[in-house]
Length: 611
Image (tube, rainbow, N blue to C red; front, side, top):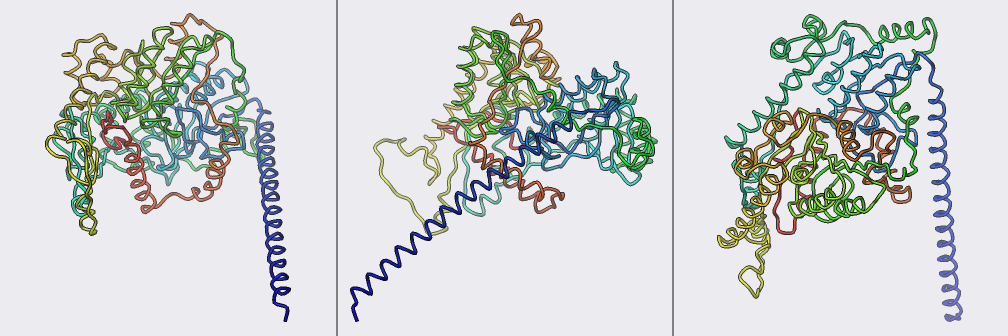
């Protein structure tokens, strides 16, 4: 047998097979890519047809505001609404308020219908954002256009927004779950001790409680006092807004809330929290009659808020010399560029440098919705804001959170606006050091090494810090706190002693902050933009540009697919396991944001969210 000929044939067969496989792979890849482009084009085309169809708004239509739609401060990283969107596709706050105000003047729009309920996991709308939406809804009254709400299951956020309606209908089997505000915090000290992880902290401020979940099993007296005071202040503001809209006293609402817990339809009607009890089909039939479709198989004349917003898109062309820039600082403040949904110190400092040098931009509004984070990153941003303010106005608009590092970057502005329910202050600093020596030892792992100086390995987390090392960190924390106090004193034109009285890590509501001097005026983003334009001498006809800008389509394909596909999975309400999993993921995400070079932070307590 000719083994060389046999081997040659085998080799040729091998290369032939490999070439065939590679060819098939290339064809598959190219075909798959072309198929993807075809499908993407079809989606875009469908979205365009949907938008075009929505453009034909019939006179007498109701604008439908779905409470399930999340509302965010910053524009989305990629505008999924342009591809057709869905009820879980977020809407930007400024788009929502601008559309509602336009609809109040639009002769085609007969009124507003509020319906649905917010997803407890997906909803990102804080009470400060919802108050701005309520303010825009109030403009329908002078236009003599009704605002109606239909609720089946309404939590506190749902009802707070719906209470702005002239008429509220509750389903006969519906319920209002508005028991008050609550704050819950996870404490990890027991788990850390069990598994051999230790935390060493340095801090300034008796009320700076962020580190407590790592060092305690429950809330400290100062933390409990502070949290209770804040919840009481925010709740009082909510009751006052609801009471004015429903012509009720706060005490009467509180009595119903405490007596009922889950407020069922008849109890809600007796307490005048709703106007009537009716099924959805009865509400729809009434709207059909009102909009001229009584007896028609079609539903009442309507246009979804998202579709209406798409018609009002502002032109993208620059308006030379007459621009107000709105910069969204939303999320944890982190060192470096950060990711979408984080406030990267380097990225935002770079953005402000560009705006400072852009002659077309006459004023800047910084919209802050951040609990803070890295002190180093906050200072990088604050420095550029200070330099920008020297050549053009810089106005701050506080969203739901503008505290700790969020206040650090706000203090040096020309004027600060906040909503009564905004959470701000928390002027304090802490450092946190991790030690996993016991964990490693329990696994049979030890760590050893060499160094050239006493503090050469002081940032290690393989062993606990020595008393000398902790003293060094405490000295840096004390210095950073002193700098924080000085910046607030200078920016707010207060003495250091006055700032000290309201600092110590204390957290304030927007209303309290206005009284103690940390905030200048109550108002939302629109009020801040109008003030900035006026201060820059732009009376009318100015254009608003927003930063950070959306990324290009090529950069977003992966994220786009990740957002579109899960919608079907989110159609069902999440169960207890999903919510618990989400809570742990959120806590880990906050820990991942801990990237200050020296471990010094100015941040609100862990997940200070009220529900």
